[in-house]
Image: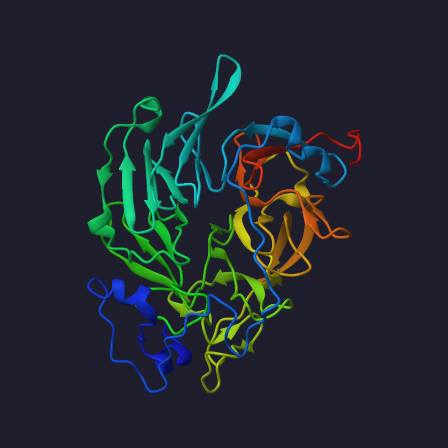
Length: 417
């Protein structure tokens, strides 16, 4: 399915970053009104010069400084530190033998977390990679995606002390080498295909819709590429509904347009809508035309979100709960880690919310809070990913503190936080 907005925009390549990929991804001629603006700094009419980034340290937080005591959960739930000492903690994927592999962004590492002699051990498995946020596991192999590189480490859980040389699949997947919003997220779907995010190569600009702003899927060997969703600015988390099998994904909206948004999104790829257009860069949130990249009828033909996830909330990892530890009301509910505002003046997010889905829409409510002090406008942690363990507990990675929290259900007798 190709939307009217996609047909109107053509396959325009914007900016130097996109041109780097031109050899691999040919673009059509630029249409009238083509814009090369890359609004990474507050300079254009729709941008707010008062905003400033909120830095996140990629350093080890001492165990007694990890703010698990600030975490608040619904009655009966408990949070405890599960692992620590892995700065930049983001994506998590579990191996067949129970190893938790963890990706990072700027720090360039992949960690392996194991149980050894009754104690949890964290080791640096790989390092020196470019933003290896994308991890997936299948048939004993760990797939590592670092921007455009795709590496496969076979029988990895038997070689944690010496992973050896990977099988290089980069040329087969043919991903663009642009860095901006291309720290990958990847996961194997119910169909056995490897789904991969290819983000926008700018804050907001006209992109080559044949190259950027997509969710793709491939056969595990890199063949058979298909585009599942277009007009997606930056998704760093997606999952499949356990009942419908439909793909749901978070999407981070553009920056520098003010404190109010446009709000970030939770989207659904409905059956029969694969390849549909989700709006970027022309239309945001529930039908907000972009103030800088303007076209007539900007939101016509756009698939609007199933829910808005808040202004600059930075929703990342999403996981539908299928375990038996939590009460039945959490079954098939999506847990979403919101990393929190990158540069919003009044900070927002820094939590985990749940999304109850029905009829293609979703309703959000709080689950894990306490890491944001709204009165002082200070945050103490940045949740970035959620992973369901085999016992039904949840792990939540905290990029700010280089730690993970284990969330378990203790029953009604547990002390309320």
